[in-house]
Length: 548
Ligand code: GAP
Image 1 (cartoon, rainbow, N blue to C red):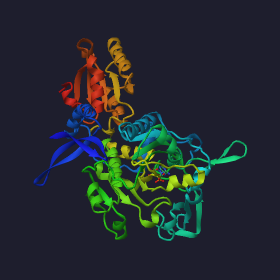
Image 2: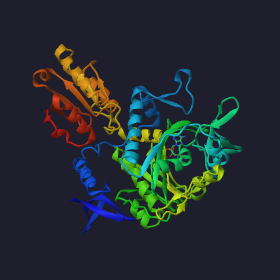
Image 3: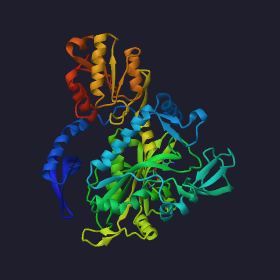
Image 4: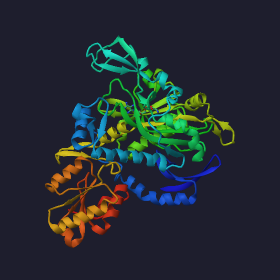
């Protein structure tokens, strides 16, 4: 049973949806959604949520019944190229290591991913606003941030396979090459990671290696103009460039990539007002790593209680980021959080946790979440002589802290969703890409069964109507089976066929990608039905007449 509760935090009212759950012999209430600051707002949000929650509980959309596959990174690279998701950049000239171009499906999926990130992190919240900073900025920014002095890796060559590689400064003499060979310590040299470029005749600048610094340099303007009060965040999605020594694993380590970052500013004396939920994840602390122990499965909030995660803000944001992936169809079992060891932390970080994913090439960082304290604002204040202080809740001046910084690479998230969606279906003898409908590059395939004039007319009318709202693909070529297979392979969740009965009955068939079940739906209800299916608000089998 769920119910609305009002909480008073720091003198303000917040409404939450809570639910009774059984834990052993006890019944307890847990918060399952934030509903807003007024009762009216809460009641409206609840109405919209009810249908979605019902479906989630019935596992209709959130849990697609397929297992993560063993597809290798090389197979994924080929698949992406073959289907028009991603190509090596400048391939007709031999490509350029670490640079990738997105094809006609890739760009749609990437845009969907970024839009969903923005919706979840910015538009659905009242405490985060966005910016879009420039790629090239005053080079002083990078002196103040510490990148000019410290943003480097160590370049080494393997004695056995002779390949160059990058290692972190603390890894010299401690790690080996993937081939098992030792690194030649004489070959080791510091390698600066920022790309330099010219500005005008004589000037020079850097291509930004992270989006974060533009958030810090604009901090005061945004805070004033958007009238933000602590705690609040500033988000940005945009390109970043790093001259990686050894780009590898498809887009995982690229030289040009995109980041989706939030700098979340707090008064470090104040507690996080948001509730930490009940999700569990594998937790791999600094101590586990030192003692060579396995990561332990635990609730985020229990890790906070036990002092493994040091601050409530860190626990809250780590859970939010994990939930963002899982709610968009990623497999929760493939994730863990890992704390940076003492000698691994960046120059600016007090404590850092990475959200990691189990790729076919091992557990790898998806998202770094550093406690940057007031390092960046105080550095920019010092270098620019521009006062970065704002007022705290008692109207006293304060330099806010960034207690954690969700920083996600778009390409790495793109790979996660592809790996979790990819299945070679033996019965259908084709790949089925079980992408969440919100991420799917094409939402609806539309096929007239045969090329008869009256059927084509209906199909074209359906296409023209649906494309006003959704990305659709109209296909008249080949057998219907082939047309379904082509859409399965690129993750299209629904396909519509127009047949002889559509002419008299004014209805069409919708086929569900994951189950291949089909329903008959009236053409004049089609747009609304598709909208609700994509939003996960209705049950496929109940929204039309099931075809046997
Ligand atoms: N502002 C903090 C920051 O940039 P980071 O850990 O260096 O932290 C954040 O980068 C995220 O950006 C990473 O977790 C990863 O998802 C992505 N990223 C970093 N370097 C990348 C690369 N060479 N190729 C693709 N993605 C990368």
